[in-house]
Length: 475
Image (cartoon, rainbow, N blue to C red):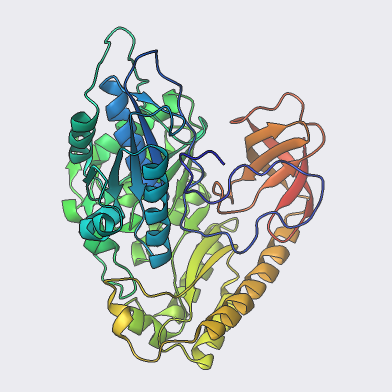
């Protein structure tokens, strides 16, 4: 892996004719795909490197920073040695992510020496400077102006207005055919295990017309898939009182309908299970939005959910899932869960397994609980031993794997639209409407792929299914 832009889950996995599972259950569901570097700069141009860690929301922050820097005449360095300074966009979601961020900062200091730190961990500047006192500056999440000020102080800009042009859609770190579209910052929830609100603040929604304008530019630039992200997508517009501005209402249902009119795939992530989510399902049945919901259920036992400070209505959620599927039978459901949460008993864990059997979720990620500095869950009694967490994680993922295999097997013989992510001499790696980049499965074509390119869309007949992936042929 290239030293810069490293903090992503996996990367492109080449198409293979082997039918072993290629999307292992250990894949962390909170990480962004590997960032793709833009072009090199002109000779003598001041150059900045970027290490982008963490989730897709952080990746969007990195894109915005680099777009601003590129507009000011900076080049984007593909390596430490060619950079006049390096920005490290950190993650602070888990203590393990904090450790990874500190390691990345240390590596950047060792390889380059001039390092500016931003991102979620930047909300704890003493934590960073205590470990790495030589960093030039520390800023918090989405503090773009402070990052630019730090870059200006370290490396003065030298713009050439005739050469330093940027595309209308800005600098993107994803492949050309898909892009993340961040619709809000922050979160109003107070889950005991989460410190995101303390780092990123309360909900701050973008105006709907600004989101639509960005989406239009992306589609005009060749983006075929828009991945809608936030901390709480279904709460979008609540802070704006769902006001209408320039003929666009700040509500997730209206926004999804507007985005669906642009002709690209629209995929919704981080959808909190509010009752009004049911209003999105008809849009999916109509084909305006992909039939895909990423909903972080976290657990199923009401006592565990109460200790998490999450809604404790798992039985009602099963009824709601049944109603969604009645309206849109092809709906794909992805979720994440936590096992080994403080106080989780054998009975509570078994309830989770039974609920998973009943819910039949298509895509599942799972974390073993770990303390995070500043989280209220740290003070809860009856923490679960590490060995028990590991055992429960393995049992949970074994159950999820069996469900995934059965649901994918039911797709054999069907014809599905797919989008091509990568092509090599062995085949094409594609995704169906049920697959988000990197975190879900793939559909592999190992015959008849000549002439395919990333971003192409085609129809494929599914010939074989594995635990997490499909194989098929073009029709």
